[in-house]
Length: 316
Image (cartoon, rainbow, N blue to C red; front, side):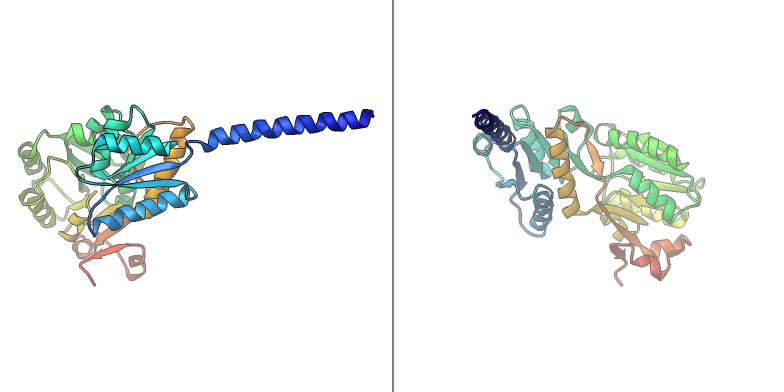
């Protein structure tokens, strides 16, 4: 009889524990999915967002609800859709996603991706992984490809890329590089700074870093001037924008879209669990190099090294 009671008691304990366990699991399951909002755009841009989305799905074990943002999508409709999905976190991709994030972040846990995060965005409370390459990765690659470089010059807009330049300062120090930072408020001021820096004093120990999406850069005349003067003075130019490599910059790092998606899903999980909401530069990167520029700079890049590059210019 006693044994039976014990067994009965054990069964009650098991049943209660199971009920509590199911209740807890249900609480975690509720809102555990990630909602991903991405721009509804044409190729080739749509493939970029699809790759990012696939990376998110892979890291999140498929627990993803996705929504294509139309150009004229109302925030009210998006909020209604999000409330219905009850996501744990919301990932918003692209520049359109950044705009929506500012509208919904008070109600949902959000992070942005596949877009440049500026100081202005960060001050507005946006969190995520910027499309801009991590300065630590850029400077490390510079040391690898051009080991004679001792000083890096960067002209930047403080309200756009100030946070990246601050990250670059600590990375440069660790790598034994001098980082000369020159803030500029517009293209005209930046042009004057480049004119001063691109004089006869430049040599093989200097490099110029061009930032992506910086409003102080004129992609037509100013970029051409920088590349031409750097070429004539045998000065390394590297960039956060891969299109500059095709035009003569030595190298650039650009997004690995699938792995960027995985990192976004991982950061979404970390934010949901209460970890740091610090914005990050992109660390999932591929590399583009201009071998003609490398040859002109007398940098040794042999055939065996070419396999380490994802894009090679000029096309061979």
